[in-house]
Length: 519
Image (cartoon, rainbow, N blue to C red; front, side, top):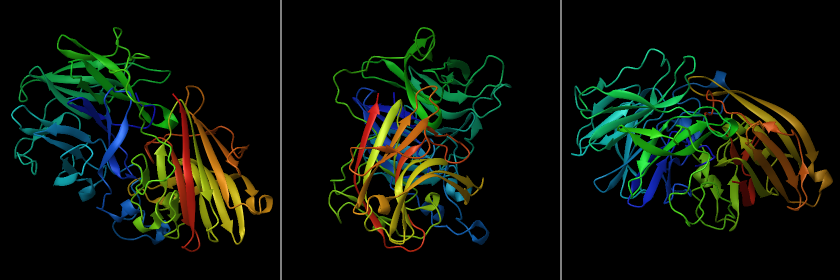
């Protein structure tokens, strides 16, 4: 359904529109809300929050060497932040529940509400941490939270506290389900409650799968069934997501699948109700290679978009790496350009503020930016990256009066608890002297092509041009993009960056972001 990093989905329908939320962790604004009328063409229509402020870690503000770092808030939120948001529509309002994957108060659950999916969203309450939780309103309006591995509790009617004594397990996992059963999504259909969870089974012939528990009485016994156990599209088995109905009463399942460097992508399956169970897939229980759009003739929409930066507001398709420094970027100081200013001296890309990102997409995609670098200062680094814990990077470096372009392979090491940056390995593969070769130039085009087809090893290739037409490949051929749940836990992103290593005050102007994808 979406060959891009859109993990931990929750999907609801309000009238004729489907709404989808996903996990974006350390990217801001966070908890994107996407909309579609046909389950094929999706666009981002809003975010549940602009930024999180529970800790300076969200600001990337600690850039000292680890042995000099002291106090609370040291580190980053790479791979942490917002996880597994639950989206509901109840009593004329939209509701969202999310819990950052953090310890202590940073991990307390947020409940947000909004009059419409586009926002504005406001914080309604903060509760204890609920892992991979779903908010559920019963027919009489009673609110519940289902979370973790088979846990649930009732909330007060105002959604501001947990009803005392209501916390309980509603099932116990099987002996061979040694991993967490997580990603809970709960719906009610024909008087029966259904809880959908991903199950990791470590037994011969058993794979990652989606299981379902059902009951007619929340205080009664829950039955269990496996509703999907399928590989798909040349990749391994998939699970975790939800099911949603159409206005006509048909049902579809939206589940994510790990696909390496591009991240966790969304698949779409028909749902067949068999003996009261929502069985996903075709008649063989497999995710089909193709399905007809739920509605035909709809306008093409996408969550990854080109941009000429002609608007005075940043498009919803963009997200910053951590909270941005608001006074260090502009779309109005030079109309038609994105200006990125240096605001903090930092040692590397992974601690650079105001890195701007979009997803990369499969099966193949290409992103191009044009940078006016004439106002960079000595020590400034700016450019374009296939950004992740392991990154392929095109960097413009100002050294005195000279400008260099380097393609490098960069890899970050993070502490397990605080996600503090301890080391960045920076292997320069190829460099050229821009000032020497092109002494009158002030701008350069940078291009990254991504190939996420099965068997192509998630390859990225890097190019530059001085006129936007004639391209020269530079650096690693078929650089392998990697997905690492221990660090970023997300797919590779196109990233535009500019940071200072010596003194602040420099800036770049980005003329445009051109994008193409082979669907």
